[in-house]
Length: 457
Length: 131
Ligand SMILES: Cc1cc2nc3c(=O)[nH]c(=O)nc-3n(C[C@H](O)[C@H](O)[C@H](O)COP(=O)(O)OP(=O)(O)OC[C@H]3O[C@@H](n4cnc5c(N)ncnc54)[C@H](O)[C@@H]3O)c2cc1C
Ligand code: SF4
Image (cartoon, rainbow over all chains, first blue to last red; front, top):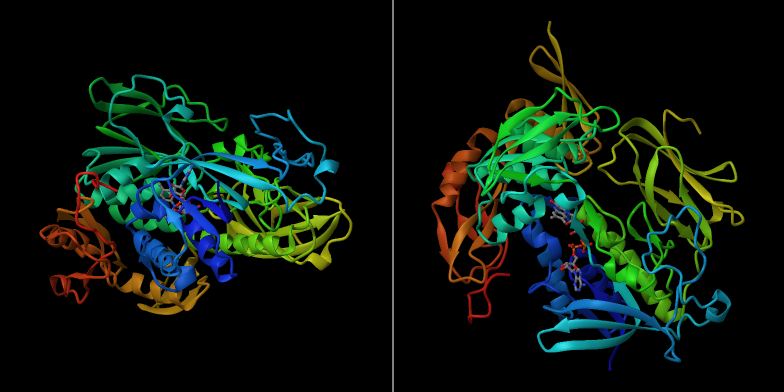
């Protein structure tokens, strides 16, 4: 069997940045596996500008941002395979037995682990076996089914879009309904225009970006409808993708019916009440040949779940420590597979942080394990990392439950505030971050992270 | 004396700062809310004449994919966006093409160039269609 020190699953911005940094740390036995024909991940289809501002102080398009990292990986001679789709990852111990994650499940993490807890090896037996544990990665490439055995496995599979199935729109299902990302790849990679008269459901960033793109290519985008009382994308995209072109955004409104047989002919929209139930009598009809869904992204974690890695059903990604190590020692995650990011610059940064931990894991034969829970408190819907070791300073990335102004982010332990940060505004569409110094932690009591308006410290 | 106040959402970076501009007697008297100088410049420009960058695609013959993405080297006046798109669409290319190549110099006399933003290699064999 082929062996490696580090196998990376996914050649998007997270996988590429991780590969380059691991190489920089002197590790050479690397293998990056990407299922598409080319590297770059979802950035290949994001042709608008606005990437790289934080990292390179330069506004570039998605393909240009990706190219910087692809060229680095190629120049360093890091081994990678495209057209190589990973179908299974198995943690296995040196003695060949199947290993299992530790039983250290935080109460805050409501588990969405479909494999259940069967076949567990008690934690005691696994002690000190970190470094001896290998992971077997199975992938399909043009030359057939292959396996590689690795000491470190990096998850960088990105995310996928929620689709109509997840939405339960009643009515017929004629052609003409696309997710925003699919419409984006049709237009930007295959030169295929989805339609001429467009309605967009959901105010996610990709949907707004597609509203502008379709308008510039001659389509008429009639409106964007959002179920929630606030937009789910960034204000800058509302400004430059909708307002610039006079495309109206209706909040508290959703599509309640779809019409057409051979092709979409129109939709019915209704306003919703505070419980998101359609209000009878508020129905409006719109004619359209295209309905674009921009209703959110979910981390792509089938492989992770099947491997038995503990999941967080808030982020839909794995539970990780501040080293970005999952519940299975030696398996790390970063980028959209861990939690959905809005800005790719932070994906690269997170992946580099993870890669440093992975190098440390290899050098030291293991890393401290997270024991201290980090839980969302008031105003916080999700966060990463969910379990910390307290052995080094770290940053908590979080999302707020609803838009807030002049707020204070606080991290407290046992009723004592150990970190706080005032920010002017926070919206669910934007990730907020708060640094915590390891020295401020005492004992193993859980950390509670909250975001409150006008809260005083 | 007239005092006007306008609020802009800065589009320069994903921070999306809300910038308030006070205009006294037709000239800017105060800019607040920007977290960096780029935002202040943006708001001043937005009052004068909004500018935007745009991206679109042009057709490529004989390439691994049928088109290549492009963007402008710098933003242009917002009201010229549709003219710019039409002018760009008149051009097509033969593969291979390289990212960074200038497709059109001084687009419509606006002083900006149109740049290719990706490589499109030539189609080599029957199995290399699409991405
Ligand atoms: C449709 C869409 C549009 C977006 N638009 C923007 C935008 O305009 N601006 C912005 O800042 N951010 C945008 N984002 C988010 C941004 O692209 C991400 O933050 C960034 O690309 C995440 O990088 P990543 O490496 O985690 O994931 P990805 O870029 O998704 O890369 C993951 C890679 O893993 C590969 N992969 C997955 N599973 C396997 C497997 N089993 N085996 C092998 N390979 C696998 C995939 O093919 C892919 O190449 C968008 C996201 C999506 C989904
Ligand atoms: S003001 Fe500066 S930090 Fe704020 S959005 Fe604009 S560019 Fe970004």
